[in-house]
Image 1 (cartoon, helix red, strand yellow):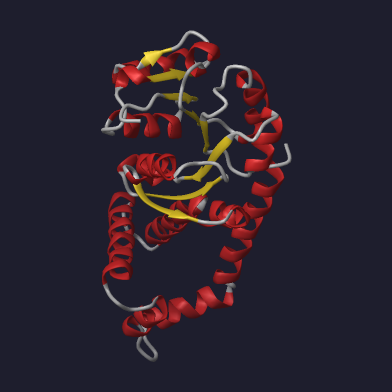
Image 2 (cartoon, helix red, strand yellow; image 1 turned 60 degrees about the vertical axis):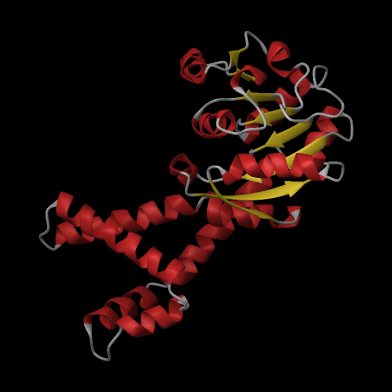
Length: 269
């Protein structure tokens, strides 16, 4: 399978990121890739990659070895019903829809279709994403490698069991939004204390960037890092005490639990 054929259904935010990854891979080529999206503007943007812009779903899906479904969970059942008769029996369906299980996809398709579930996150746009992958039973090692290479192009990947995917969605899938909210709070706090918004924003983002780099590069746990920057009676300790009194960690964990619960609910839509 030196030149694999692909279909990408849905070329919004994540779909366009994955399309950009696909056209850069050596085991396929733009003329082997078809795309479809009901939004004309999205289709126009996809066309710049010199891929085949399909006029309808049948044209996009027929004969393709891999079919990437980059649509919202609420749209999955209807889309699967529409493409069921066009899918090759041995095609690999790659889904990035939160909460939608392999079993549900196979049930709607009414057969033991090969399925790879992926949960990427938005930093993939800068090739700094984190993607968790789950494979159904019939994928070959080559097919698994092809799927993983798509997502390796936009960041790091990890293979998990499917029962962990709701937790993955809550942590890395929704995680960037939690981080953005924290940055907003830092900026608002800086402005409240007299900094200009541009200065507060630069300081907040660079502080976060540097702190994350320390976690990645230095062989120290978060707790050890905190200890190194905290002095008895110091400013950092005063700030941390306020976070603790406000149950900061518990609130973050509760947010993750709410996201995981919603992921499970979306799987039943």
